Length: 246
Image (cartoon, rainbow, N blue to C red):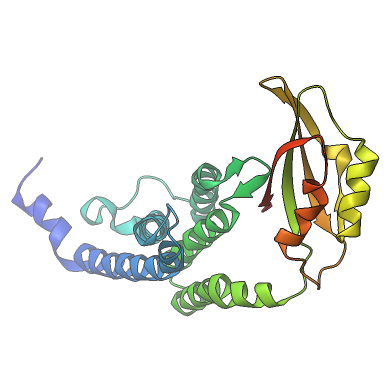
């Protein structure tokens, strides 16, 4: 029978203490998630502080309530014995759909991989907060923040092979030999992966699209110099060069 005593049971004693502890967990996970998301927001990504904070807090909420199952329903307890590992499994599966939504393919480039990985990390932080591993959760948040800030600086200073996407548009009824194009870019220190080339026709003009990979990861040739490999092609009507991110 519903009465004041039953309702008061939700707001006093052990259930009230459990709610306060859960609220503190949620607040902490929200702040840690927003900390990780600040780097993405700073760089103008679609998923920013709010998204990361909500993901981390929601993961924490779903995890922490399992630990207080004996305080559910005003202290009556859960009619079943919930399994925390199944809750974690569900969170990991669910966050996978969200991460997939932020990964976008634009031409030959794939964007959003770092955002997806860091969202997954935010969910893990929330889970760790939910099970009471506060020190480990704070450590993970700081490491994720360092990986996306200092890691980016370190990555830029390490040798890496430049990868570019090339589009060549030729005059009507003309096209050079593939070997000629490959030899020209090789002189500039690049390898043309013509096996991955796509060929299309736009307004009656032949269009080639293929990736280029630098032969060396140390010396960076100015892209203005690379354009010289194409501008001397008499059959060329237009071209474009853009970086490829995988």
